[in-house]
Length: 261
Image 1 (tube, rainbow, N blue to C red):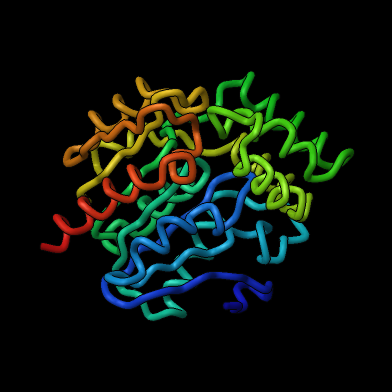
Image 2: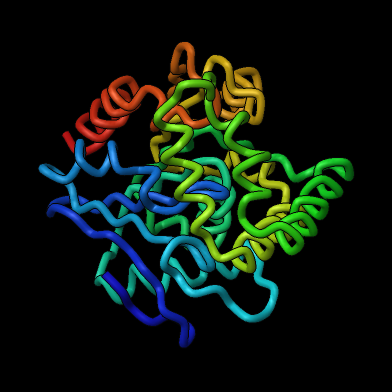
């Protein structure tokens, strides 16, 4: 479905009815990375999975944006859809956006799922690498992102049908949106001090073989949130939600059932 936010075409998928669950995708993907979770949840929940600004079918802004800007747009989307409260789920970059939403409107979210993400800001080296990625995207197009990211997203790339699917998805992205997001992530706020203030019951999902957000970081984040549970997905790299959807779906559905019981 399409709507208009800040004058820009914005895509979101909406399925099912019941308590709302907002799914925020990672870089350099779009709402389709959640397809297995949408299928698992739509029979009991109202699932809303947007393409963040500049990703997928959502039109990029002509100017640079911040993750704070993305959060503002999501609050407007929830207003348009008349969603008063939702469970907030963020994967990787989507988790960074989720932290911004929790700063702005903590009472809007009655549950939190953080998958393969981290609270700390990028160190200087990380900022430089993201700026290099932005430059590569301008020179080479979205293929720069698929080449760099797919080996980090998956535990096995050779012979993986999922790798081909992800490459098609990433290579179809608007490079401007990817550039804007790379720079937005490079200069994002540190959210470490936010963690102890989070009141919502929280599920933290990590991947055993995740090199981007290693299990030790995920466990430490869960320990810093007052009411958090940590689940580790065995034999998974960064993209847990697609590599081992059955394990992830069980963790999420068990969490949601307990939350709404």
